[in-house]
Image (tube, rainbow, N blue to C red; front, side, top):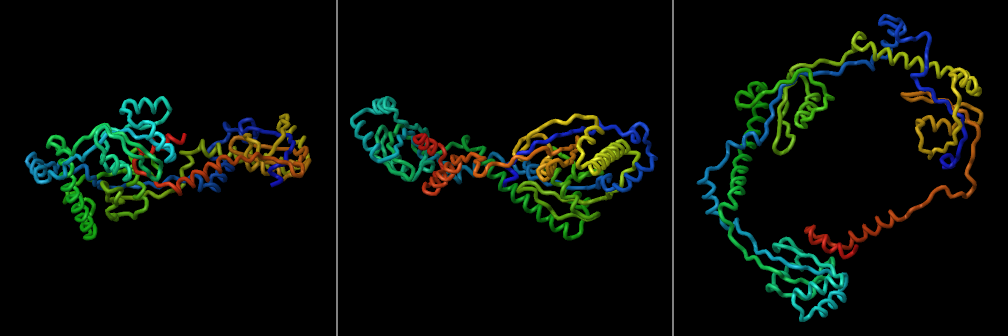
Length: 428
């Protein structure tokens, strides 16, 4: 904990790799048959492997591909409508204004104040006294809290309710309009009926098809035979990679699964979701192998020289752990003076900063990343005073969280978001 609070004054050398020149390792003079380069390549061959590739064949079964085969006739739609008219009834709906109050006393006071007024006068009174209300159009009984529904659907048009208590607040309702239950016409529900009948037939077909495919796989059918017998399209992919970034998530699923399977083996039917499944066969596997240096010479050369520069820096550090000026002279670079703490936001590698805070005064710390090497000479260490307050504590977030949790525990939540938003507006 103390280390996080302490500060250190350092001299910093940052030497980018592209500024380091090695006389014996000039890029232009190193060829593919250089012995040192070849030794490096052979010792690090695991870093230069090709990716495994595979040839696959697969069948994609998508429910939507069969949808057009099950479109019902006009007569079927009419017959279904006439036999099931009770399903196509619009329930009674009502439009109303809802006044919300935090306490019964506020609701009772409002009720008393508007007694004898017309609905227009009640609205005017509410607006003049900054009493918030919400207006709802064409709401059926199932879209409001039960306590409110019992009041709203007992009112006559233009009537004002008594005070209604719910678990969220106290309410007074003005009923604006009543829309009686009505039977929907055929044209209004034709599309709904079409979808219902189509989905029923399609679901049955799709489930039977999947069962049939499962049985054919168990019976040892090849993937070609399965495709032919069921009039399904067989798709071939050559030399695919497992890390291919596919825009098509379905194909990505197929490829990812393919790299878990053995060669010449028809997979089980795999479900991606309720509407999409696939079967895959691995036709050929091209194992990972060491790349030819001819193909990756530039990459190997860059890595080789990078390693040599790092090794040189490590040797200089080992021989000058207490003589920072020698390091500065070798790289012909002037150091930068810095005051550091572990909390400081800077561009130094985290591991290097940690070494700085583990190194004694007048000693050198060394580190590196992919862009540069770093040397730091520790000049001084400042420890925090005993009892010094080094952080500000902010409890607001915790209090908000606790308060919110308590509300959730003690309130019942309605499924009607519109009504809830109306209620919550009272508490802003």
